[in-house]
Image 1: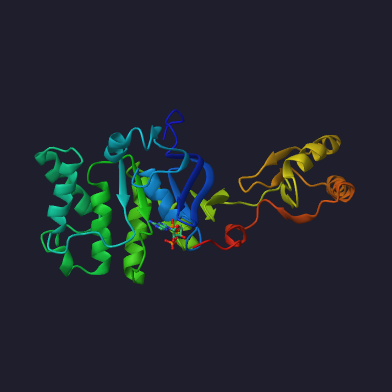
Image 2: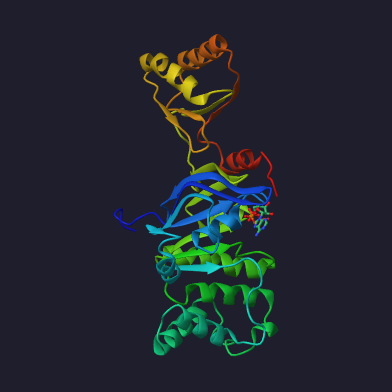
Length: 315
Ligand SMILES: Nc1ncnc2c1ncn2[C@@H]1O[C@H](COP(=O)(O)OP(=O)(O)OP(=O)(O)O)[C@@H](O)[C@H]1O
């Protein structure tokens, strides 16, 4: 993926309310990785985000862009360049996988010959070429999931949005689906944004993980986190984080420690010599601010995710 390409997905202050529920709450983030996994508790806003990214749900506030396209203004182009695999059953039981894929490819603008050719390719890619003429209603759940994935790919999208692709699958079906999802970005160059409840699925198929909590961004990290020899730490304080960071910054200059905001809205310290940590505690004491957390940045992904998901949800 070239550096000049626009991000797969960009959200700027995105809000979406359903009655009393604030499903997305000022969500701001930029996804540039080949494959991103969206993790979050039930009701965290994952499906709403994916549906908003496709233009199926219109945000009440903010802007969503996919591949540089505005999801409201450029909706037709978004449909052409993005594929979507919904979480819930959506396939007509009496149609074959072949007919489903050809019909949807035609609806998305492909001519008949291209639609048939692409259908053969994607059904082969998801391992359904032999059963492609049977009615979908006679398929196992794993085959139905693979059909849903095939229809998301059939028009040759540059980005696919997958809503819980392993949902309900048995261990063998899950393995198959994970292998296919991984290949989309690594072998076929298709960008992927996939939601899941399972960190292991994301670690095995994605380059980065994004944690949503109550419709906001709680964490965004590369999947491979090595030991960070710099001693970088993350600091969470009570009260006004910006004011604390502004007061802290000059006090850490003498120790060569730089500050940067983290994706979760905490304060990142580039290193943590004892004198710098003393300065943090002194300032907190002077301002009457609580130090709620001070942890190494290079923690295991699982710790980080559990921590980021920890605040519950509004579902
Ligand atoms: N069409 C709708 N009408 C009313 N409420 C909705 C609608 N869609 C989503 N919600 C609510 O918005 C919140 C976020 O839902 P969403 O489905 O986006 O979360 P999620 O992270 O995908 O959850 P899950 O993991 O359970 O699928 C939930 O409280 C949900 O009940």
